[in-house]
Length: 262
Ligand SMILES: Nc1ncnc2c1ncn2[C@@H]1O[C@H](COP(=O)(O)OP(=O)(O)OP(=O)(O)O)[C@@H](O)[C@H]1O
Ligand SMILES: [Mg+2]
Image 1 (cartoon, helix red, strand yellow):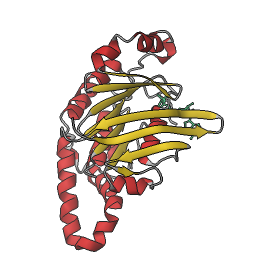
Image 2 (cartoon, protein in one colour; image 1 turned 90 degrees about the vertical axis):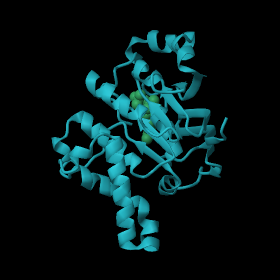
Image 3 (cartoon, protein in one colour; image 1 turned 180 degrees about the horizontal axis):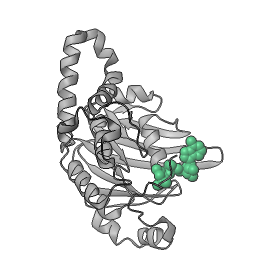
Image 4 (tube, protein in one colour; image 1 turned 30 degrees about the vertical axis):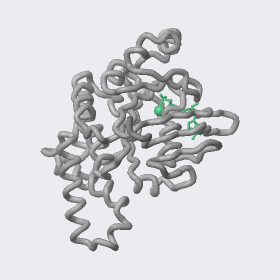
């Protein structure tokens, strides 16, 4: 088994009196695909924010590829290879696909810009953008304005933008939310086809979709990890069944757009 690429150690994120993430410990090995599931408000997105540097942790440590990231900025973490997509679409509507991609890679490469010079950087960007668009099945949409893409294509573009950073860890926050069944299947195939050495954490409310894509599953509720196991064992885990089936309002919503933006 390879060394862990990500270790979350006893991480707590507190908003006032609320522990949105409450002493969570996770370990992901390089190349692993992990689902992060749990009812609304469980703390899934907040845990992503703790990993990416979007919120500061109240306690605990985040270690990525052997480096303690706990006090590093979000930009520094991105440079070291952590990329994410957001639960709520985060694109520039009036720009085309390529321009959105360019904006996504540009910020990341500020340091290299001075080292390599404009031309070298341009070539490197170009290669990354072309590859990420191809993997996300958007190669024919380069010059289409985002507002003219289907919603499914917009979600593909968000994956492409994250991939353009050539990350080692990709965090996907409900990438299939709001998609039709056909679009969901298509996006699932894109995720399935991502490079096997890329470590992925997928937040997804649709259990069937999530569990069909991953090696291992972490279940959160009220800020805590309540179960962690292989997909088949999670399906039959009584505690997980109670969390999902015992409270109908938290049952899989097929990633509906109502999934609150936090
Ligand atoms: N910036 C914030 N300030 C205050 N409370 C917050 C903040 N962000 C999240 N919360 C609260 O923390 C808890 C966890 O929220 P979080 O968004 O992490 O849940 P989630 O598991 O992603 O839920 P969902 O499935 O609805 O996206 C919720 O009670 C939420 O209201
Ligand atoms: Mg969320």
